[in-house]
Amino acid sequence: MRELEQEALAAIREARDLEALKTLKARYLGKRGLLTQEMKALASLPLEERKAKGQALNALKEAIERALEEREKALVEEELRRALERERQDVSLPGVEVFIGGLHPITLMERELVEIFRSLGYQAVEGPEVESEFFNFDALNIPEHHPARDMWDTFWLEGEEHSLPGPLGEEARGRLLLRTHTSPMQVRYMVAHTPPFRIVVPGRVFRFEQTDATHEAVFHQLEGLVVGKGITMAHLKGAIYELAQALYGPESRVRFQPVYFPFVEPGAQFAIWWPEGRKWLELGGAGMVHPKVFQAVNEYRKSRGLPPAYQGVTGFAFGLGIERLAMLRYNIPDIRYFFGGRLKFLEQFRGIL
Image (tube, rainbow, N blue to C red; front, top):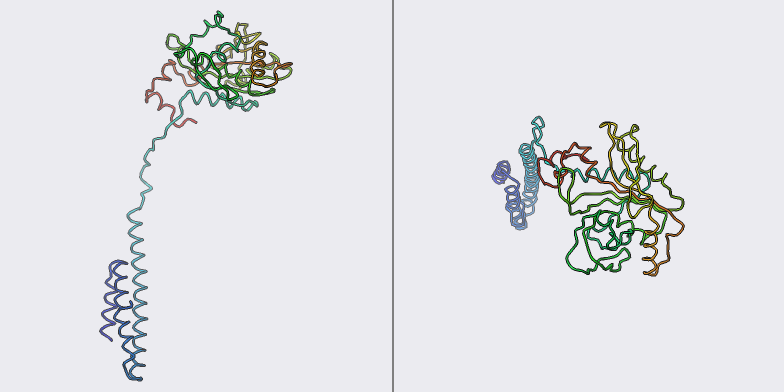
């Protein structure tokens, strides 16, 4: 019995891992273990000898279980110590720079403009870049062969007739084009909604024109539209004034000059005084929504079984170029940088939110 105890305790002390300890436990205390076999043999002994040997075997079992528990605890602590040593971080070392992406400067400028108008109660909506001739021109008081169409150098899609989802889910048939301005969303939104409302429409537009440092065939606009009872030019000027104040501070001012656009009457070109640059910035066009635009919307609604909703209301609209503002904000000398895809240019805007 003494030899069995010395053998078991020595083997447990020398166990190098939990798996070896598990094997030893099975060897001595398992169903076929040495100590278990000794326990089974007690039945064949005389009563007095059985009693004495049984007490000795129970003491040995307790000693082995206690040794197993202590060794298991020591092995677990040793494994934890080794793991901590392997995974230890030297916090005194300099950090490793993690590359993070950044938003495109056009996106940054667009988001800023949208947030300015959202703070004034406007809702931001978007529309399709592939547009029908009806929404891009006809409904905006620019019928076919009208000389005003020369103001927009248009990318036409191949084919005479195409199907395009209309604002009410129906097919708006007609020639398709890449939208030349964001103004088609004026008609699309009015057809599907009733006044009063205030919206802005950011988006990409396309013009077939020669590119240079200040002109591109693809650029971005922000369209604004407000419709309701009693809307006047004073409301329009107030909206542009709030934009100027948000962009350039309390020293900025607003200037309106008469200009012709087919879908507004009267129409105006607006400029904002840029205090830092000490000059006027011509930003876009604006005006009161032309009655013929409201008429086209009412006729479209009527053709789809909806009642006219644009009688006895007025509204104003404006549109401005986002690239111009972004070039000034980030001191970018050439509009073509925005679409060149050069990493050295885009990396300058990492981390700007």
